[in-house]
Image 1 (cartoon, rainbow, N blue to C red):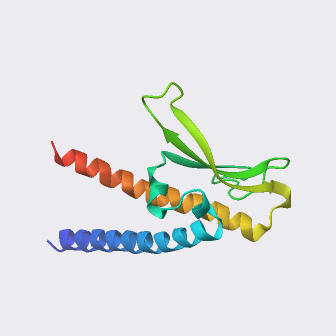
Image 2 (cartoon, helix red, strand yellow):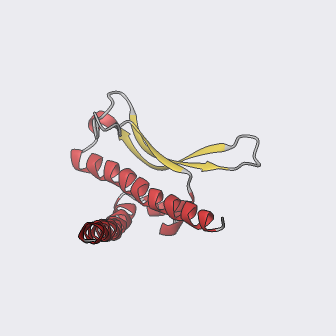
Length: 138
C-alpha cells in the first residue's frame, strides 16, 4: 500500500510542478510578447494561441544547435494559420522581423528563442487539454 501512496505523491508533485512551470511560463511569454513587439501584429495576447504553429527563421531551434544563428539568414518569427476551406490551406504571417542573423544582439536572440519555445510549451498544454476533453466524450 505504501508503494501506491508513494506513486500517488510523486504524481501529484509532478502535476503540481508542471502547473507552476506553466503559470511562470505564461507570465514570461506575455512579457516577451510586449518586449518583442508582437503585440503590434496580434493585439490580443490570447489570440496567439489561435495559430497552428509558430516557427523561427534565421536561428536554430534544434536541441543540438539551439539558439545558433544561421549565417546569411534573416530572423523572423513566423505564425502559421490553417484554413481547411481555402485553396491554399497554410498561411504564413510574420509576427516579428529582426534583421540579419549575424547582426542580431545575443540578448535579443535569446528573447526570440525563448518566446518561440515558451509559446510551444503553452500550446502543447492546450492541445493536451483539447484531446482530454475529446476523450471524455467516449
